[in-house]
Amino acid sequence: MSVPGIGFPGPWRLRAGAEEYELRVARAVTALDEQACVPAEHIAWQLDHWLTSARRPLLEMYEALGGILPWNASSLERPRQDLRVRERLVAALERGELVALRVKRRAAAWAWPEPALPPPRPEPEVTPIARAPVEVFTLFPDPARQAEALRQAAAAGVPFCEECEKLKQQRAAAA
Image (cartoon, rainbow, N blue to C red):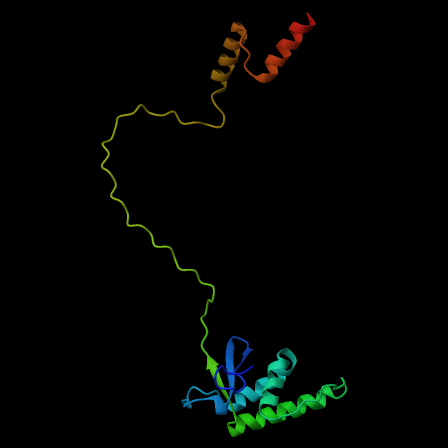
């Protein structure tokens, strides 16, 4: 990875918990404020974690600082190689060859903007209309009224429900 137009390698972005850091080769850095730089000890402390979780950017940094990595390193040589990479990066951070900057990130990266609500419309003035009182529905109506309605339906021969109608049709068909 190289900085466009400059030819220097980097920058590399690495994350540690909620923090994100950008590491750059000091030759590619232009007039930095020392307060913007992260202390070398803080970044050196994170290197062991990054060697397991973000190995490739650290190897790129090592090569950008002049280190040479063998192409065919075995799994037995890897811990020794990791130690050599870590020591070189710590030395580069301490000497100022490699600079780390804290990247400011938004707390909620995917926050959607709230839709603009239209202004409230004025309510039209309504004149109250006198209405008849509404009968309140109850779950269990008056049993006396229910029985009277069933008697009247039976006397008139009007089916009161679907089942009664089906039963009436079956009796008529059988007769």
